[in-house]
Length: 240
Image (tube, rainbow, N blue to C red; front, side, top):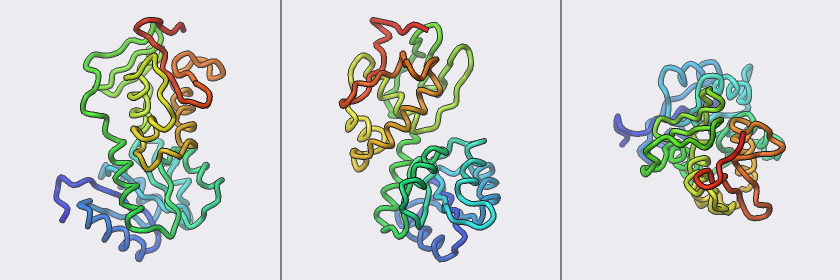
């Protein structure tokens, strides 16, 4: 049974039967579960209860899942998995572009659901062995993994958990090309190793936040058809 130390999951759905189904399966895996039946209640509970992850249904009356996600992202980086009865690619991309961390299409199996929840919760935690000292990439960019701070031109930039993990693995291998499959496995989990769309989106998110010129990135470099490489700042610092 879940304890006070168990991870807390907020389930947002207007169908009580779906909430009960999810609650039962997550509690069997030692998660604590709280629920909300509409978007406004969900935003309030994210603010007050600080859940470790949110399962958010897209099709809800009044304030749908996309609107709720926008409101959550205005004040929280909590991992969010979108739940939907639709399987259209456009909806999936829209959710991810609005800041969702993952997407599950109804109907889904208990095993798939639990696997996805465990994956996003794991991604919210940086690896135990992190760089101890702050990293100064150049005069424009510095990174402190222990404090979860990225400073760009003197301003602190907010990163979501998945963005942190992706940046961590790129920086830890600075100067070396990290293949797509390796990044997907380390950041999202081995079961995501073919989801290259996720990787492209999150590389774009990172570049939007740290690069001066998205069209000519200086920090996160693309090795076409292979993977990505963070500039080797120790030997050849990036230039602003």
